Image 1 (cartoon, one colour):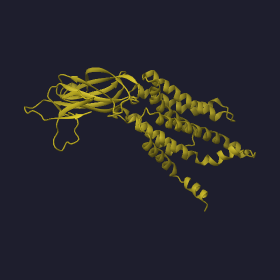
Image 2 (cartoon, helix red, strand yellow):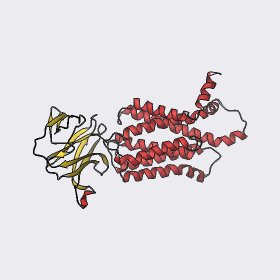
Image 3 (cartoon, helix red, strand yellow):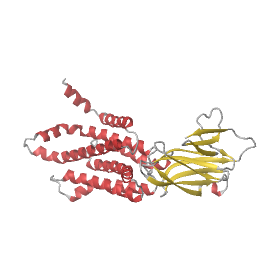
Length: 373
């Protein structure tokens, strides 16, 4: 059997789309480094461009198939090449989707707490499942356009603040509008010059993309989408903090011999002062404000089920440092109970979380350990 025939037979196996998807995931895991790196963003932009081209070619091939059955005119070289390559479009689309979704998973998960992003990741997982099991293995135009709107949305959410060097709700909404505009533009390219001039058909093809973008905008206002490109690289609670030779020295109560992983005070024993130290990554030249939002939940009584605000302390940060912009806030006296410090943007979107418990101090003097960051 010729090699070309063997290759074609292998690529036609039903499990091949999954292999191409995970190949894209593996490639991104090796090649991507940081969210503001120019090469990484150019790679993702290249993925999106190729993905858009393949979606247009797939859509036009689907619409032209009935006409091709009736016409017998000879094909040109380019058209003949595209016809031969058409069976492999789903594999290429699967590889590119695996690449962009894995990159977004890497970039969006670079935070100390994923609690606020659970819904967003569930949506991504749901789309990946749909990507595998919906009809015709990625030949549905509505599915392809909807997926493309989501990947464009995810890209613009973190790339626009990097480009503009500023982030707020307007920049986010601008990215959402651009994502939908690009997706609907693909719809126009697919139907342009075809025998399907119906406006209704075009609207129905672009409707899933419109609905998905609207849902994602709603996720933003519910704080279910992390405030990329910001991410919490490190956070902890300490007895004392000093700065020496460009490094912060963080002091905390030494744990038991088996607690070799301990790097901060949890629980914190005593009344304070209590220091909250965080390192927040931001892209180069991006300046913004973060907030240490101190919250308290009592040990008993009606207030024991919900956290209430104890203080909000703003901090101006600037980006560029690989390990994150370092800063701390301090509270002089804390009541026993559950505490947490939400690290938020100035608009209240949660970047990460540092939670701990305050307990009454004992008569013995604790042994203090110090680390540098």
